[in-house]
Image: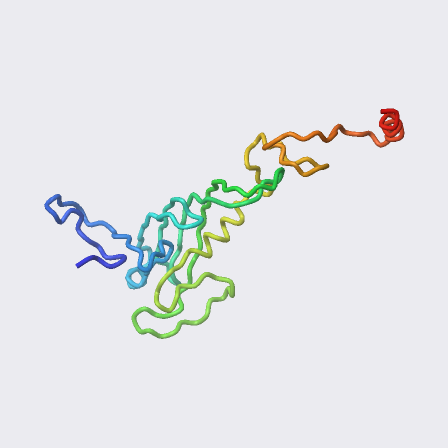
Length: 196
């Protein structure tokens, strides 16, 4: 029988042998969803560690779940791939970033009695579901937003777009005159164009 998510299994039952390890299986293909019913039955300070599998926007990462008196402290370190538009040429592109956070997920239901617990003091606190699952997808999304560059560039030497004709100068050149014009000499520049 295959182990369910979060079950301790013995590595190498086929004769290799080895220590017990934490099996990190993801039901329904949700690598950022963790069943913590076993952890909630553990004493304060108990720890579970997971390796994040790739799921947009996460490329790779690690999660540590620590039992607290009110729920579970989630520590996450993840490499993410963010999407954005280049600030110079406006082309869409993806770029890597790193997110790191610690958030407490508050318990809503007592795992032993099944009774509802008092609501969290913070209305915006992350909650453990009534099925005793922690979904860190929203936390990863929020911290990815804060890690996003204010003016991302598709590459450091991006030439941008021509302000006259809109041509992407990284792809091709244009014939527009983009020389800076000092407004004090604008009348002379107009005279020069008239004389050809």
